[in-house]
Length: 247
Image 1 (tube, rainbow, N blue to C red):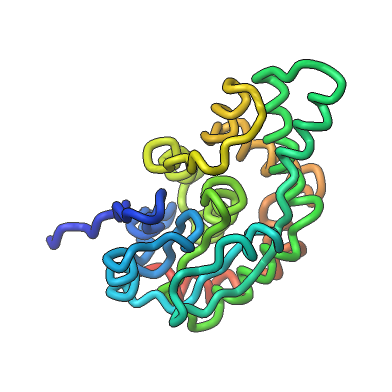
Image 2: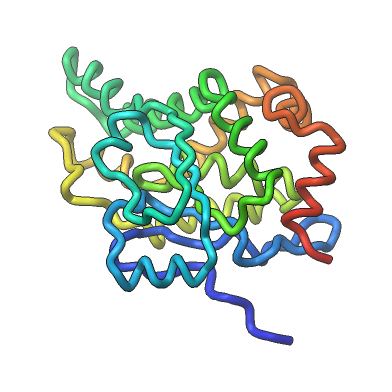
């Protein structure tokens, strides 16, 4: 049996760049390698990084950054088609609003992060629906990213793996790999307390759980969210599996 490709690609100008392939599904199939990648933003790729990304055959990027975020750091590869799916950031503004009335705590940061994940469902499902419509087209290999590549992107990747039938515990493990591979950009340090910034620079199971709790509250079940929220009925789910799974 041939050795599996590397999941994480150690790029100098991007962090947390990794492959969603190789995971086994509940029915015994495997997510195809070298089709869907995730990363932080692609504005600081070195020449060597660009060569690596080109060798992967990536031709599309799906960018969840807000409008201002994207304008400040455009994709560094002119030969990659960027699809903007803006999910505007809310976390820092929410924390500063709290800080205007009292001292911030680590618990405040956790709850604001959880609420931002709820907002992916309540306020931004249309963006994720658009992503899945693109994923059903012939655009792979592709990369999904936001600014840090951990929250908006992390939720998107969890949805993709769920749609493909990967077990929940494996999806949780993949999500938490961000804490191993993400490198916080010191240029994005804020006036927030260190313990708050520490929360913002990581992922926690509680964050992702908040999004799926919101799905249950708003739609009743994940299957109904796929159908009614993301436009993945039975035929679309079958086509999605056919594109991204192998026996």
